[in-house]
Length: 141
Image (cartoon, rainbow, N blue to C red; front, side):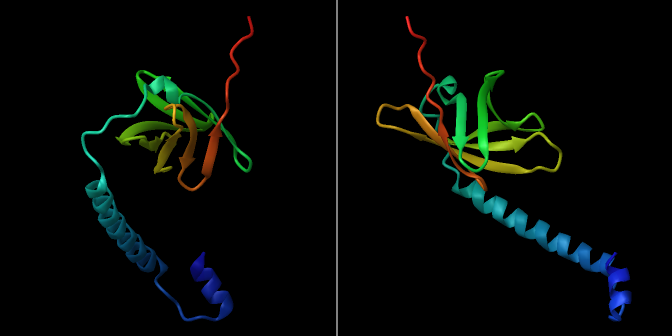
């Protein structure tokens, strides 16, 4: 495609395959370095502040709508839509790393916020902002 654009614009020919390969290699190298730096900043030996079922619920964001957090097989799962689901791996304290199920979707961090009574009030999803936990009303007796 770029070769066609160059020809139409009268630009000198460029080996775009070689350019893209070099760019991909540089990106992979940077990603490897940042991954190592991130791993070294991880606080080892921590556990979540509350039981996993306390994180479960519906979280709302004015722009992105809602996400669901559920417990499946003893682990947290975050679902933005049926096609965009991530398994949450405990990172440290109340931070989890979402490993997205769609191939190539990568990983994101999810940080949960607690109030003074150790109730989960919100989650922050990297790249999407803060989602406030929807308060489930107890059934009336």
